Amino acid sequence: MRHPVTAAVGDRIPAREIGPLTQTDIVRFAGAGGDFNPLHHDPEFARKAGFAIPIAMGQMQAGILGAWLTDWCGVEHLREYEVRFQAAVQPGDVLELSGEVVAITENGGHSEAQLTLTASRGSDPVVTAKAAVAVRS
Image (cartoon, rainbow, N blue to C red; front, side, top):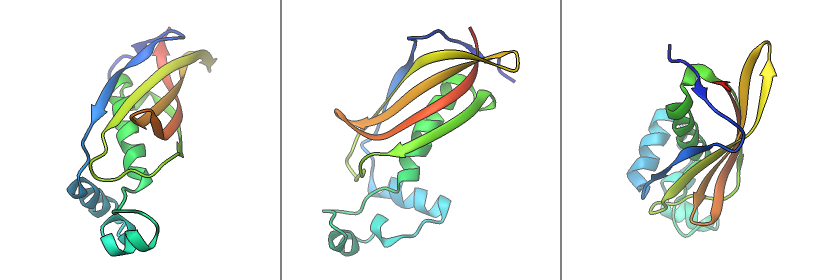
């Protein structure tokens, strides 16, 4: 098991850029998760639903953001993870992942960092999240 990361209020997680996402990425994620909604792979269905092209499922962006977070802190130290979907993601989009420690709290004698996280397409957030991870403060 890895030791918890050291963190303080105001610390930023090293940013990461993912993409450009491809239709293949979306179809592979659909296969892994069993989400075969035609909105994610059928151009005609997506157009009828109001999108120019098929869109990625929100859980894909949430998973990308969560994986990036746990690359930093270690999955064994993740205590809470809550996401909010803000906008649709399409093939060709590049996601910029960022996060900041907004508080350090005590829980059962252990320190936890409270984080805000964002996956953005340019200046537009597509997923925002809150997380708590065990840390050394």
